[in-house]
Image (cartoon, rainbow, N blue to C red; front, side):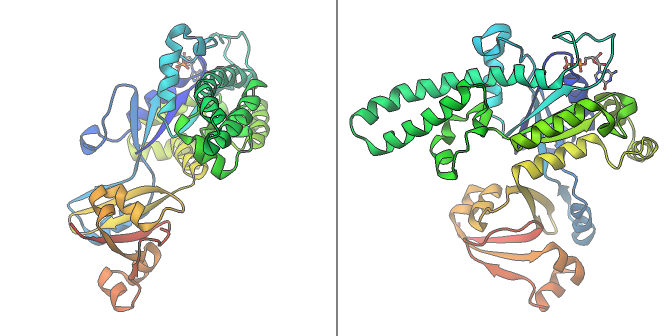
Amino acid sequence: NLEVGIVGLPNVGKSTLFNAITKAGAEAANYPFCTIEPNVGVVEVPDHRIQVLTDMYKPKKTIPAVMRFVDIAGLVAGASKGEGLGNKFLSHIRETDAIAEVVRCFEDSNITHVSGSIDPLRDIDIINTELCLADIETVQKRDDRIKKIAQCGDKEAKTEDAILMKVLSCLEIGNPARKASLTKDELDIIKDLNLLTLKPIIYIANVAEDEAGHPNDNPYVKKLETFATEEGAKVVAVSAKIEAEIAELPEDEAAMFLEELNLPEAGLDKLIKASYSLLGLINFFTAGADEVRAWTIVNGTKAQKAAGKIHSDIERGFIRAEIVSYNDLIACGSETTAKEKGLVRLEGKEYIMRDGDVTYFRFNV
Ligand code: GDP
């Protein structure tokens, strides 16, 4: 399952947002395959297609795709030096697929800001510095070893050393490694280091309640957008307080509340969509009388690898995938009709999965 780590300075609204996530979250009992700890919130990925498939197949159970949010509190200035248990938190971030950084864009004189004033770009800089320092340590440690091997004439080690040096010079001027313009091959070589500043990042602009419906009027949000665009990052503006209120309401009342606020969707849904787009994710489905289920994969994943999402045995014994696109299936009204019309394709292991593929994997046990 996909995991997003929520970070941010103290008093920016992380807990408020995280509580909203856990309240809106999926019932833990429905997700036996997810371990849920107190700092983890599991939410369903909104996808209307899963309901349509459920209506068609009338399965015993329906399992939407889920996203895990991990509350990584305690990231403060000095974290990389181990102050305030910082190092432990940094290692939590290492395990996530993406980072969501909450930045405070709301003014409220009753709530102190750790740095004394509202300034999202400065806050980002404080956190970036900690993440960069932690990465410098990781890169240096690795390079100490690699340099020795490179000196013995090892070609691969020489290549890696050059990449590490490139990353280091970027980090040392305070830039995240994602700005080092590494090629795909270079990224592959150092991916096991799990560098924090290489992780895709979403900035969550926490705006005041009365700005929730028109966050772009908030001058900090505008600045943040410009900054994020340069970094290839995304901004999602939410009001954590409003999210917390929405999470308390039954579905129909929540919809009415959103309408009153002139909000097309809940901030949480916006956050999930932004994460999907940032990480290049798509959903494919499995559907039958027992279960209708959505699975998350990275766009570009081949059929055999996608099968491994369901079970490693299916990946290993992969024979073929029987696939019908969601749109074709819905247009036909049933799987039988789709088969009669020749719209259920047999695809091999190299087939690149598409969003909405309704799939049945054939495999050898
Ligand atoms: P954390 O330290 O980052 O986890 O921050 P909290 O979620 O505990 O929030 C700190 C304070 O800011 C709390 O008193 C929240 O009620 C308040 N807060 C959070 N979001 C908003 C918001 O959108 N508007 C206002 N006015 N206060 C907020």
